[in-house]
Image (cartoon, rainbow, N blue to C red; front, side):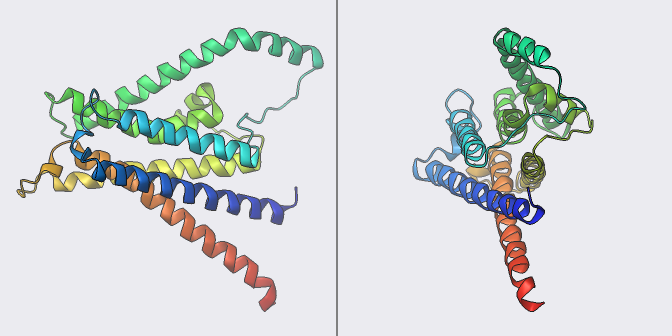
Length: 244
C-alpha cells in the first residue's frame, strides 16, 4: 500500500475511533448524571460500570476491526508450510478455550496489579469493594482493548516490555493509539486523587468516585487530543502541496 494512502487511512481511523469514543464516554457520563448513579460507581454489586464499560470497548473494537480490516496477528519471520498451517487450523478449535481461559487469567492479574497499586498509593484497606471497582474500571479501559486486538499471549509480551510488531501497519498504529489511551487513563485516575483530601465534604469526593470518573475522563481527554491533533495534521498535509 502507498505510504500516503496508508497515512490517510490511519488518520481516518484515528478520527473515527476518537469520535466514537467521545460519544460513548460522553453518553456514559450523561447516563450517570441523569440516572443519579454517579455515587454507585464504587460498588461492584450495584454499579452498572462493570457492564457498560466492557460493552463500549467491545463496540469500539468490532467497529474498528470490521471497518478497517485490522489484523492483530504478530509479524513472524516465516510464513510456514501448508501442512503446518493445516495442523494449526485443526488445533484452533481445541486451543480456543485455552485462549479464553488465558484471557480471563490475564484480566484478573491486571486487576490484582491495579488493586495493589491503589493500596500502595493510599487506598483504605477496609474499602476492598471500592478498590476492586476502581481496578476493574482501570483494567477495562486499558488492558481489555489491547487484549481484544492482539490476544492474551501477545499482551503478556507487550506488558513484559518485549518488542511487538504486528503484520498490519494500520494495526500497529491502532495499538499505539490504545497505548496512548492507557497513559491518559492512568494520569486521569491519579490526578483526580487531589480532591480526596480537600475538606469540602462533597459526596463525589468519596473514594473511589473521583478516581473512576478521572480514569474515564482521562480517556475522554486523550480521545479529544487525538481527534484534534489528527485533524490538524490531516489539514496541514492537505494544504502543503498547494503551497508548494
